Image 1: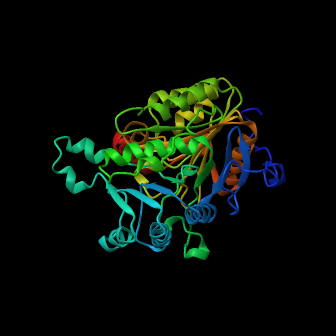
Image 2 (image 1 turned 90 degrees about the horizontal axis):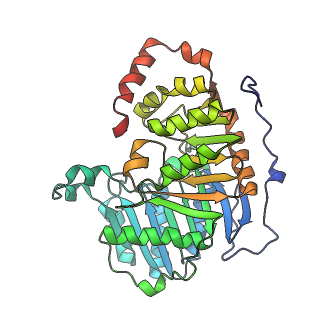
Image 3 (image 1 turned 90 degrees about the vertical axis):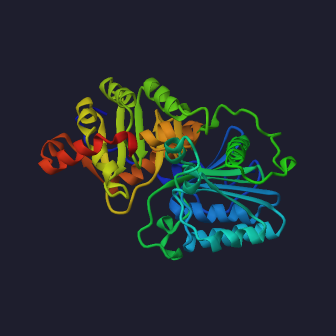
Length: 407
């Protein structure tokens, strides 16, 4: 496709997206609907679109827990979704499952009654870096700024979830009381990568001074490498550049397509340069960002870099209507990622994040189909439209970009 061609290829039909309905899964068979469902290497993967698919799948996995449950989230609220998950966790804790809940103290909003109710049921609940504790920390700024932005659930060391979906009503489908549910993407993994997510959860749990674990329950016997499905994280003290480096390596190798969907798109100059260079060498670079957001300053700052990308030949889409919160990418139809990491300074340099990396053409096909199904909800930002933006918008973008490292 030439750069001057504004048309989009037709999305693959649903029938073209691989399914494994007739194949045995590695471990537990989830029955809830998914955007796609397939076996890749040693894993079963289920791509989940929005809370409408993610919440039922997560609750189903929780209900089948027999040994351990580890749940980690940036936002946890004492609303309908939060109460639904609390009830599910409490029920399993009463049944003797070791339930561990780690939520970020800055991003979450839960009452003491909510927490105590879980603890009374037998669940262990820990707030990551409470702000009040920061006042006693000599490294106050670092303590406050570095947040736990991961969203992960690991059940019985066998099935795991990661992606962008938090536990609150923002993502609730209409049949669960939601009004305009946010657009987001989650991934369910069954196989060795679940061990990786659990390993990093347990590391963070200990750093957060969570109660002692019954360690024999958390088997690492299946923690073996699978080059086709991996988990990369930014951790408390190390590996903070892992996600950024994985993105940049894939972008630099790209020869055909780079399709990115990201809720808070404000990359470093090096990252931006890599995207621009890819577009200049003829790679089909498309970036989807929210046109409606819960953090307007990030949107204004992000718009300040549109010009450079458009000049290089990239195509930009702003999602309209409900909030777009997904963090995904597919490169050359083979390399894909779904996770919690935004492409901004906070995620790439500060926060604890977790992304799944999948190298598989069939899964890449599904990721491209999801991207294309989202395009009709967007407005393309063209160079001519961009040149006509009003002075106030230019000024707002310039001002917001000055604070990009803190957004």
